[in-house]
Amino acid sequence: MTSWDKYAGKARDWSETEYASTQAYLSHRAEIVRTLGPPLAPGDVVLDLACGDGGLADYLPEQRYVGVDASELMVDAGLGRARDLTLADLNDYVPPQPVQATTIFRAIYYARDRRALLAQIAGYTEKKLVFDLNPRQYALADISADLHGAGFDRIDTRPFFVPQTRALPFLQVLERSGPLARLLLRYRFTLMIAASRRAGAS
Image (cartoon, rainbow, N blue to C red; front, side):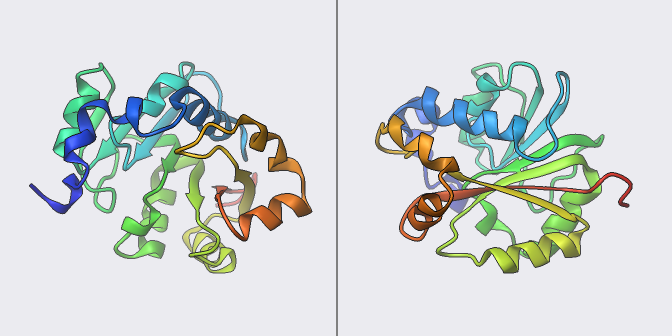
């Protein structure tokens, strides 16, 4: 067993047991993937790096979902649910064709070289990269500099206030509350980031 399989005992029912409300958590994540930054269109390909068992696929029915994870047990669990998953390390994987969107959730810290990974993703992603960030652990200015260095010149952000382990639906309405949302982010929760290129940028 490799270090990627530290959740091996939970792989079989990962999406069903990891969240207090799987539907609330993953559907909201999917909505942000579709709408934050340049919107996705039906048929767009979403490449989900470090996808676990690929549970997000069930909440992106209009897009073509492709997942990549380094845990063989997670990939096997997702394949058993007829999800399109590939066994690979997010640092090394390059899709055979360009994708419209790439996502990385709860895993940006797996990057061996963050700027190199972002540049690699920029090379095969046509519309946007969407990922989450703990703003108490990583400075947004540092991440923004890496994104610009990788070729992304537009950065859109939005708080994500759906707790993983507790069902507190009222918090979601605070995501657009401005100063209050920024205050909450100083203590808990994550920031969603969509990195893209402005029209005409190369």
